[in-house]
Length: 150
Ligand code: HEC
Image 1 (cartoon, rainbow, N blue to C red):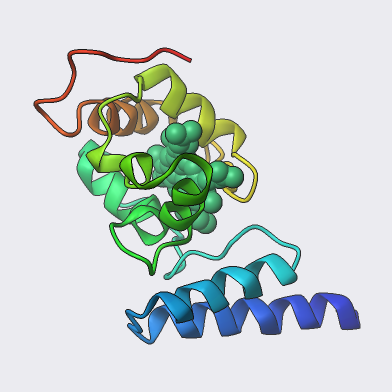
Image 2 (image 1 turned 90 degrees about the vertical axis):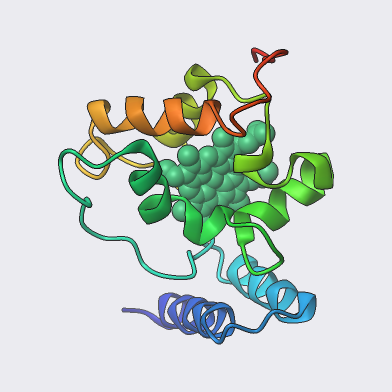
């Protein structure tokens, strides 16, 4: 691997380290986000997601495995931080939103979104993606009166 790639790996490793240290200060999340940006790669999740949980996994279990590392509530999560900057705090935490449709969630997961890397069918199958999107779109359970389609 060349010097640039090596630097990117080092910076990404630093980002993971900072996130994984359980540091709950906003500052370290900021450093991690900047480090990930500097690396010029997609942001690194707090913990690496590899294999699929299991074939019958619920939407919630799939979310916890593939999405929570970036979309948990709090300053330690790069997806949540990016959405805070893009839309403001009210739309920062995916599971606290009431405006996400299943179609939109599926499209984002398959195509990625800026720093969010896409997931292939070999990672999350179409059947799993349906359960995952249904779970995300139905959360929070009570807030589905005014779905926004985008
Ligand atoms: C590596 C970190 C990472 C992972 C893993 C990740 N995301 Fe994201 N996600 C992001 C970032 C960063 C953004 C915001 C990009 C931006 O605004 O520029 C984002 C944005 C989104 C959005 C757009 C929200 C909106 O209002 O437009 C959705 C939906 C989403 N993610 C769903 C998911 C789901 C579902 C999963 C799990 C399959 C997932 N993400 C996994 C980082 C991640």
